[in-house]
Length: 129
Image 1 (cartoon, helix red, strand yellow):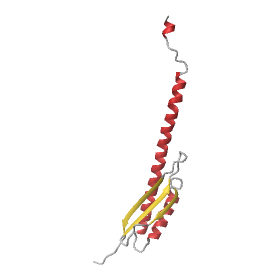
Image 2: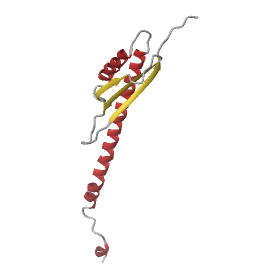
Image 3: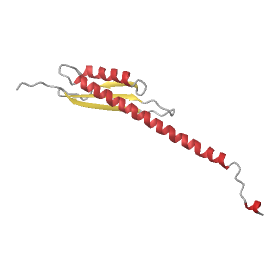
């Protein structure tokens, strides 16, 4: 009599793994993709800041700032920001704006993520007292 009341749970553990593991792996991949996106964003921001620091020096040019930004992103973060570009659009004689743009390495096929970061700095000017 007792045996008839007991439920047959054979195979339930395998079934729970079939349901839970793909969801767990998807969440893990999303966390990794978010981390790669964050690293690419930080690499672009650091490169833009480096370019703005170079371009704001007295006697320098915005062209030197964009090339410094590209050199920085290619040497400091070679795998985190793909196809980086740098521009100085929005700059004026008193303010330097360096913008770095690039694509993020993706873990999910078909997902196209891009990052754009800008840094703005005043141009150094020496005044006579």
